[in-house]
Length: 438
Ligand SMILES: NC(=O)c1ccc[n+]([C@@H]2O[C@H](COP(=O)([O-])OP(=O)(O)OC[C@H]3O[C@@H](n4cnc5c(N)ncnc54)[C@H](OP(=O)(O)O)[C@@H]3O)[C@@H](O)[C@H]2O)c1
Image (cartoon, rainbow, N blue to C red; front, top):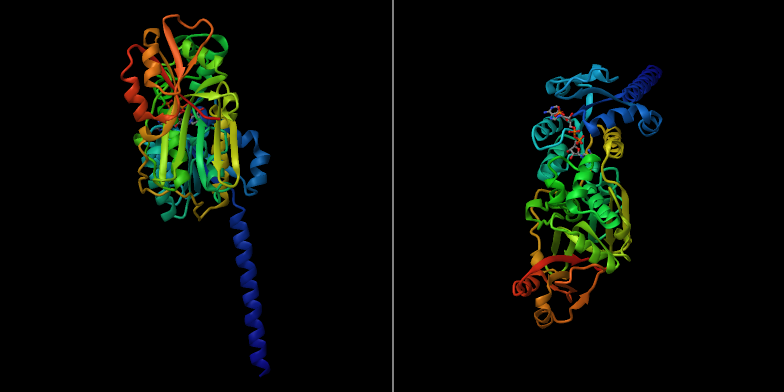
């Protein structure tokens, strides 16, 4: 009996030792520095690499094990860079290194960014990106692959650069019934509209100024025609409904037709013209109206004061009421900061998926032409009588130095379809711009 008791004690002691060893091993493994790779050493990617050095202590506070960028993938060499020895040109070196647990994709474009991200996720390596083009086109597919392989796909920097908006949508605002999102989502166009308003310079001149300052690309089409803002409101709308809002389904209008005369009228009405991405619930249809277009924003709306390259996202939830996220929508370090916040979250969640509610089921949007809005219109002065006959409840608008041969007015609320039918009956229409309600 005594021998059995002794044997039981020995077994128990051995189990204790095994437990202690297991715990020690887990702790030791858990404390191993997490290795990451950056794909694309351009504006954002270089910011990411530098941020790990500049804010080393902040990173260590969040992830005590530490995170180290082991590889940088780029097409070029970077002689003289303190990070030159980490540069590789073969993606397989990164993929086949079992130490790599997190990848930051800051190459931009759809390919090879999509293939590279997919391959990493299939290996259980988390991917964080600032690439809105890729997220808008393949977000749900990559999220699904991440879930199947116990890793994460995060994209905080893809909307609003340094502004935290994706994480709040996924977490802080998760219990809300969000009814409206309105965003100034493109810094280039907001800079251009602000300069036109404050300095009385033409669209062409301000575009040149924006290109000289590095705010606008040599080919500015994606910005000024609204495509960039459209992709971002598609991402936010998808997170709002948990399904896929395709950017191809969103009516998209840019700012290239906005003139100094429009800006002067807006100013005299106490409004400012801004390129907005808008997503609003259509309660009757159980879906959304989504649109990207320039709007005249009243001074009483919080988005009115968002100037220059700054971005802002205004969200209305049924319980939280109105909240607004404001900050730098682009730039090396603001954007890198958002990417690194995702990388740190991934580092803290190795072996599991950080949930993002966004499936590949396509959300059928409401017909935007049925949305009731008000318009500002400029038209030949000769049409003044016809305007009164056609537009019940319209109000004449004036502006200092407005051309004498035209008249301007705002309409009563009506659907775009009704507006289009009336406007088609007028000759010499110079401009039509939507009015945002306060
Ligand atoms: N810049 C911003 O402020 C900002 C803000 C928010 C989001 N974003 C998004 O972030 C992404 C990156 O933007 P960015 O401004 O950093 O672009 P960028 O300065 O052009 O950097 C991209 C880098 O990736 C490299 N690259 C391209 N294709 C590659 C490939 N196949 N293999 C390896 N390297 C490759 C490029 O090399 P080469 O130069 O030799 O082609 C370049 O060094 C884009 O999706 C952009 O829309 C940017």
